[in-house]
Image 1 (cartoon, helix red, strand yellow):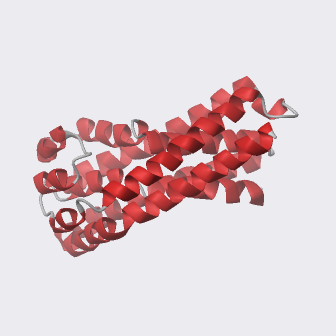
Image 2 (cartoon, rainbow, N blue to C red):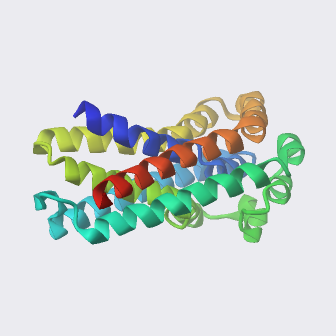
Length: 238
């Protein structure tokens, strides 16, 4: 089980350091309905992590990939493609991440957050008027439609199935992965729910830290994950 944890920990961290999700959350938490919609975003994000990971477990269990003595060719190809995608994404994130650092650090309203992070959907400018249900969909979509987060969750589910652990250990590792993936959204949301406007200094520091460091950390994590997938694919081919 220790080896499996070591393999999926970088995948969980790839989700933890998701700048797109954190910047979207900050936009929600500086809106007038911060408490209610912050919880809605957390609910949507948590459901997305759980659903995508569980769907991957179910799919790879149905295919019975853990019963093969050697990984079938399609798994090797999937790892190869995902590895190349993550390496390319790491380069793109690192090169483009510095462009909006200053404006992201100074943003104080949802509109400024969106202008500072143009990768966010333009309609996020209207986040202050979002209903609870629409914010749940936002949290779900930010995860489920992000190719990096989606890739990390699916690779983790594949690794869990391939490990062929006893059911109790599989549940334990899977639960840990999901909880870790939810934590970066849960911590600021709970803080705002408990402290309200008094949490503003923390949000300011969080925004500044993200603007200054997250692109480098995210690029590094994607590079590590990508290289690990390429290494596994090449070992299987050779």
